[in-house]
Image 1: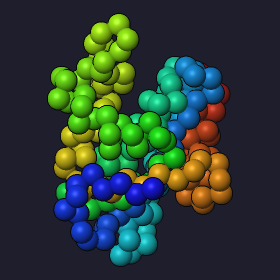
Image 2: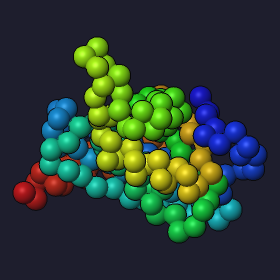
Image 3: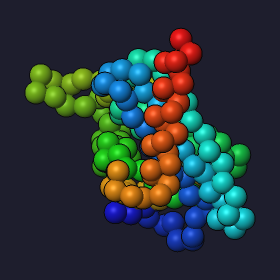
Image 4: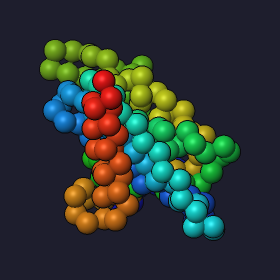
Length: 163
């Protein structure tokens, strides 16, 4: 599923950012990773990291944030993720959250949006770039998604080994 975040976006992307994040336990130690591919040159850059105590959703968000943060100028970019949380957050939920001052309605009234710090960062980055979001099925043989998963898992395993 491809979702344009900016309906007027008509040109092909300059870069594609593939992302993944995950945890061992939720919460637990987790890792994130991205692959940034420049279309014209076919050059790639990988980035990854880990946290000792986090959640799967935070790692998915950080992967996208870190990938977009590597861009040095406003860029047309396709973000490829396997996270329905990221997909729905960017395409459906965020406009309502912002209209409600980063709050969401619950059965007990209003509550702060979970991971608000990361959603605010992602919102600023999404406004800087022309973003098209594309969701793929996780663990289904998508080459770059599988590579990001490997990098994320290795990042948190290395972190746990080093502490």
